[in-house]
Each structure stands twice: as structure tokens, then as C-alpha cells.
Image (cartoon, rainbow, N blue to C red; front, side, top):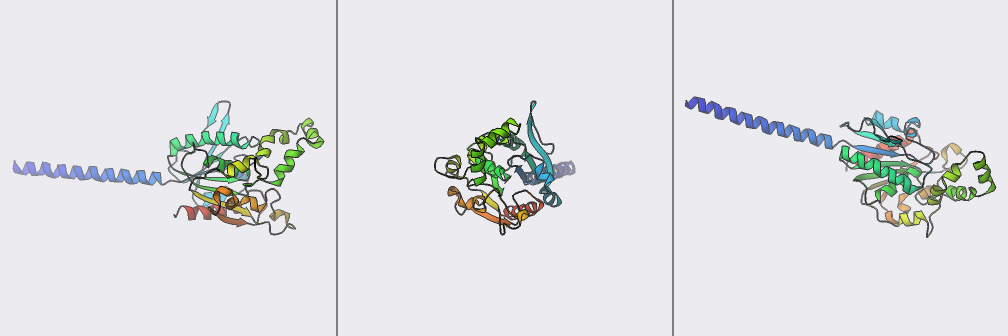
Length: 286
């Protein structure tokens, strides 16, 4: 009888140890799941979600193990969800935005995407924006409704505006702009609000307001085109001056941004993917 009681006690202890071990394993697995990282890629003017892939940008990320989880989009049926959003892996997701719309409209749609994303992933994201997409992404991080963000990386983005927007905004009301509209080319007309938002920063305009808003304490990194030689068009950014691409020149972020330089044109390219990969390795080590 005593032996039987001893055996029951021993089995009870073994069972409890097994339960504790399984609970520890479950916690470890949950911890691993929560460590999965999420990148969100935001395209620029007259671009779209596939540009991150067709430009070669995504290839270095995929070679390093980041998984292409698809894209957020809107159509008449509502929000279209990325196919790989539930993967417990390091993923990147692209978004489709109405690239001719003003910054606030684009940011409002990005906000909806990100709120859905956070319900699934429940982890801080890293935002990466090219050109105007970098400004949209930065507008998002100063929105009080934004989900947790770990880092913002921008590539050739006009944080202080661009003379190109000034010229295009004025051109839309010239005979040339009117002729283009008659011919069915309505880009300048459709983008008038965006062009106004991206005019060079000056008191009273949108970028001046935005650049003086409080920014959260996250990682900021500016990837800047060097523009070493105007005699090499393939290696020169004619769209956004390097000064404007540097978030350290934003009043609210003075000295807060890391910088990386690139000898490329304004267009997105595979080298940008390599630079971003190095930046990510640095950010996620901290």
C-alpha cells in the first residue's frame, strides 16, 4: 500500500514537471514568434507596390531571409490583405496608395492598413519610404493614432520639399498644363494637392507645419543621394536636393537621424536594398 502511494506521488511529480516544461516551451515559442520582424514599404509619386520588387530593391532582403508577404491594397470590395501576414517569420509588406493624392489622404489609408496589420502581428514595425513615400511614412509616425513603430528609413525623400514640386505646381495652371489636361494627361491636375504639400518648406505651408510637430523617439535613418557629379546623369538626383533628403535638417529632428549615402539617381534600385539591409542589421542589434 505504501509502495502504491509512493508511485502515485512520483507520477504526480513527473506530471507536474512535464506541465512546467511544456509551459516553458510554449513561452519560448511565443517569445520566438514575437521576435519576428515586420517591414512596411511605402512607394512614392506615380509609383506602386510592385516597384519595390521590379526595381531590384527587394532582392537583397530576400537573400538575407526576409519573406515577401505580399501587399495591402484597396478595391471596390474593400481592403485586400497581404497573403503572408500571419507568417511567424521576418517579413516585408508593401502597400498601395493613391500616389497622386495629397499627403494626408495617403497617410489616412496607410493608417488603416497599419491598424489591421497590428491586430495580426502585434509588434512594432519598421517603415521604409521612397521619395514622397518617405514623407507619407513620416506623417504617419507623427499621427497620434499610429501603431508602435521601431524605425523610419527614408530613401531620397523630400523632407524639406523640392523645387520640382514648386515648378510643377505652377506649371499646372499654365497653357502647357492646360494643354496636357485637354490631351488627357491629367497628372499635374490630379496631383495639385500633393505638389502643394511638397513645395519647398516655407512659413505657412504644409511641410513647415509638419516639420515643427513633435516626432516620436524612434530610430530615424536618411538614405541620401550624394550628387557628386552632374556630368553623370545616371548617378544624379534631379528631383530632390540632398539637403532635403536629410531628416537632420527637419526642425523637429535636428541631429536625430542616422545617414547613409548612395551614388545613385532618384530612382529606387538594388543598391538601396543592400544599404537598407545594413541599416536593419544595425537597428535590430540595439
